[in-house]
Image (cartoon, rainbow, N blue to C red; front, side, top):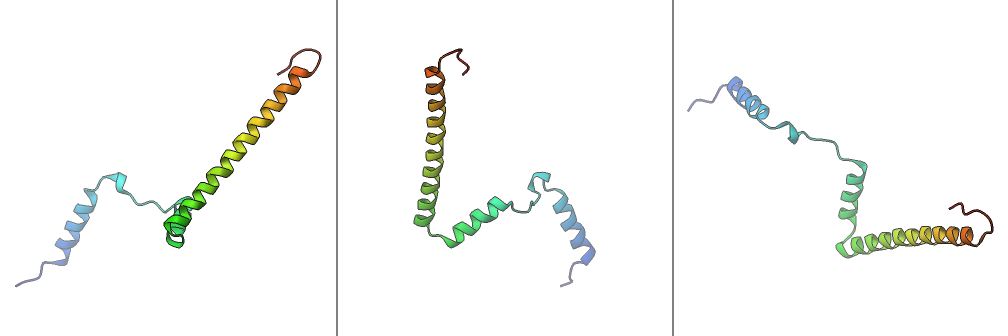
Length: 86
C-alpha cells in the first residue's frame, strides 16, 4: 500500500475546516464561565445548591431593604406639611 501524499491531506483538512460555519469559532472563556467551572470542580452538588440559595437570599434581602427605604421615603413625604414633592 502506498501512503497518501502529505499535500493532499493538508488540502483536504483545510477544505474541511473552511466548510465549518463561522459561528463555531472558539472564544476564550469569560471570567464568569471560568469561575463557574471552578465552582463545579471544587464543590459537590449539594454545596453548590446551598451556596446559590444563600446568594438568592442575600439578593432578596437587598430587594426588601430597598422597598423599605422607598416606603419610608413616601411615608415621610406624605406626613410632611407643605407641597407634596414625591
